[in-house]
Structures are given as C-alpha cells and as structure tokens.
Image 1 (cartoon, helix red, strand yellow):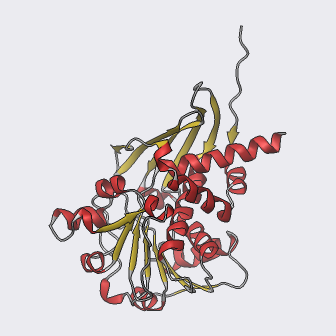
Image 2 (cartoon, helix red, strand yellow):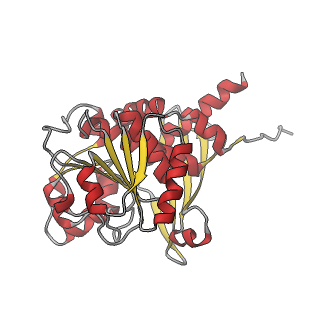
Image 3 (tube, helix red, strand yellow):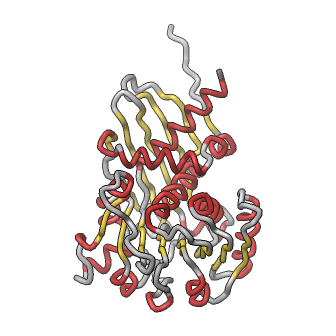
Length: 324
C-alpha cells in the first residue's frame, strides 16, 4: 500500500513572512509580464444567503503549479466582528496533480491585493507622492498602507471611515503592520478635505454608493479602487470615472465585475475602449502609464488568480527552503 501523503497547511504567520512587499511586488511584475504563460479561467462567483458570495479562482502554469482559491465574502461579518473575507488556497503540481500545500488564503489574498495596487502605483502615481489617503477601515487597510509605502516615499497617511472608532482602531493596526517609523498616520472626518490633501487615494470598501467625487480630486492624484468586486458596488462617481485616465488589473475581470466601470458603460457614459491599459501592458512597458504630473490616474482591480498563483508559489518555495 502506498504511503499516505501529508499535505502541509501553511498558516497566516508563515504566509506573511514569505511575502515581504518589495519581493512580492517584483514577483507580480514578472507574473503579469508573462501572463500569456499562465492559464487563468474566469472566476466562478456564486451568490450565498445574506448577500454573501462564494468565489472559486483557478490558475495554472504548464510544468509548474496549479492553484485554486476558495473564497467567501460576507459583508455582514463586520456586525459579528469577523473578517469579511475567508479563504483557503490549494496548490498542486501541474503535471502530476499532486497537492503541494494548503495555504491560509485570507492573508495570501490581502498581501497579493495590496501588492497589485502597489505595483500599479509604481506605474501610475507620481514618483514624489508623499500623502496617502486610506478610505476604509477593514482588514485590508493596513496591508494597503504598508504596500503603498513600499512603492512610493509616503510620509503621511490619512485614514477615513464612516466610524471614527473603527478609524482609530485601523490606525493602531496600521502601526502594528510594519509602517515605516517616519510615516505619520491620523484620521480626518471630512473625506472631501482628506482627498484634497492626498497624492494617492486608496479605497477598499464594500460600498454600493460612490464615496469619491470628481470635484474633490486635485490634478496629479492617483486613485486606487480596490473594494468593489460586484457590478452593484461603487466607490467613485461617474464624473470621476469620466475625467480620470483608467487602468485595470485585467480587462476581462474588470469589465464583468467592477461596478465602477460596468454601471457607466451600461448607461453609455463610458466605452470599454476608454480603459487605457491593463496591468500586463504596464508590466511589459507596452503602455507608458502616467503621462504628465497633472494627470489623474485611476486603477481599478477586482482580483486575479494569476496574482494568487504567483504569491502561493513564493510561499511554497519559502517554506520548502525552510525545511531544507
């Protein structure tokens, strides 16, 4: 009888240690530049009770690795003091199908999501960006802040949330997440005033109504929209979507799932051709990204299994190296 294989479970602490942002950003740049070597079917999305969502996200690369992420997104979990997102990642060998590891998918998702935004910011935000506005106070907020600080010389972070109490809690978590010592962080109850101060605005919410308005955004700002992953979700108003230079993580995903794009396109205000480029074009340098200091750039991400696979590969390699 063949021996029973023990499949390692890689917990959150080890995942975090295996994915330092500078190295993860570099790995994602390469993964997107070589996107044609990875098979990424469109993710499955299934509605669950209580406005929750089940996502299944597969990706594989020939003669390398195969991964599937199972995600549940439950907006009402904030009322239970539980994470909105729960996830597991199953990594296997592509050729044999042999399972290699089961990975904590929540921290994998948080880290790769933040690193994707930081990668895009490197192409789209001004190189002298020093003030970051974080809109949203969930578990993603600390990761987004630290990742953006790894990409640009951020000196000041402003946190805005609907609840001042949650904003203060988010500040403490941001400080504990590896924020550089020289970076100050505080709250601002006026979102309009905070937008006027910011060089980069990162929005990570589950809002179904626009939070960011075009008249609040000064020339040269980079907008990073992360939260809306369903067609009924919005983080930016139509005027901002029309006035900004638009970029996405993947065209297929953004055009199918991003309410900030789907809604104005359905009303004839935008065309898919208004999107300047996706992250693959930016990573391959077939698009220049930001063209001027006054340009307002907007990056919309909905998540991509290609990024999960790249991050999971880093985790498995790091853990295997530790075992040697």
